[in-house]
Length: 424
Image (cartoon, rainbow, N blue to C red; front, side, top):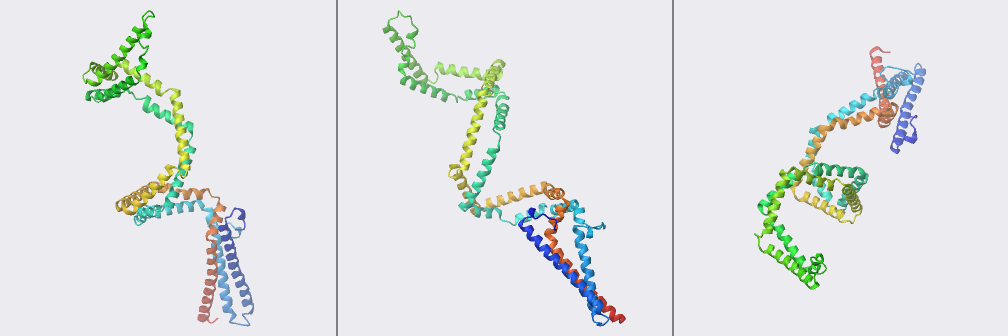
């Protein structure tokens, strides 16, 4: 672990590294201590026979310590650098470990049954409602949602959005044939007489305009008469034209069967038929439609409309006092209150969340678990070994200590039994 560059370790990893080194020193110290005890006991056991028991305990402890040192070290690297089979298990089998870990998570944690059982026992809507009822929490959600929405809007390419709008307009406005559907709609409109209200409205507006714009008739007709016509006669002609126009409009307003109305009906009926069945009329109508909706100016206006809408929406999203943000917060609080008072809604939301989570887990659990496998495969073998040893190495050093203690007890027990049986 001394090869781990401290500059690349987090504070938590540095603390783990310190603890690991301390435990390694303690385990090694126990081995050295037993070795010294063994040497002393071995040298003096002829003079002090009871030291044979101490020697046996120290000998067993050293064997246990060395065996567990080898086992622990073999997980992470080759002991003493020797190419012993089945050592350096983690760096040698890193990818297999990643695959096994991914399969374990997929099988035991990402199963539909586990997810459904966990979510079914969790009152998701009730907890969410209780949390959202606090205005500060609703404000936080609105703020985060607004930031995300504003970020998405800024990330969108204006040129691509304008091109998308143009493509949608072309697909839904220009490519489809408008003539026959519009003719059919107009035919039904005329057949039911629904257009009569529009004619009445036009006649009323024209009557009001005539009453307010009498002076507009001055010179309307007389201006086209020869210059030798007396001015008095010209004025009478303009006056007569104005009164005739007023009488005509009033007659149309008063008589539902007026010839002008019938003429309008006949024209609309003919137009409806031509739009459905006359290829020449349909062609002219489609050409006019294409000229209107496929012109550069219309595309320019679409782009301007998008920019205006986007900029206005971004400003509203970023301003906490904007009506949009205020209404969003109020709506979230109301949702929280409804979750708290409407058990049917709560159950529906809980079921929806559970079903959605189960569907996602059941459909994508392999892809989710593959994150573990792919991540481990990308790791450098030495880096992987260091990461794992930092996480579990300290606990593994306890195994060395336990092996030392158990080995000492086992050595003492074996020597004691042998001495009792054979008297040596």
